[in-house]
Length: 184
Image (tube, rainbow, N blue to C red; front, top):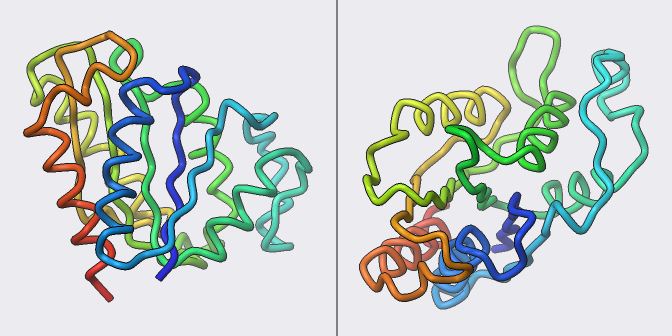
């Protein structure tokens, strides 16, 4: 089983990357092969709404997203992580999500099905503070062909990597990864 982790934080070693890494570590401990892609390391444009993908089943924009598409298509399952910036996902994650539109058919059925764990890192210690937004994002990813089987939220710190000190959240992240690797 291959699981790709897609990290939408611009901060290397930050809380999003730390949490996504814990999910992937749990998956690896359960026997999965894992890979991490940092969106900020790639030049990815936003969707240009050209609709090329409606008739060609691929995106016309040639940029770093082509590497992400290949990794997704080679994977059995996916982990997607984003920090919460201004009450929503990062701009890197939003550009990525918009570009997943290429996986939709004209009737809005999806061309892919990749079970997904979502990861969110936030400064707010109230882990339910953004729950309606997380549910909205989960529904959107599910429509795109990435049904969300678990959402891991870590909060209460803005210190890069500080979430690693939260053993409860890190344990939830590892357990979500193990469960993702264990489902068929």
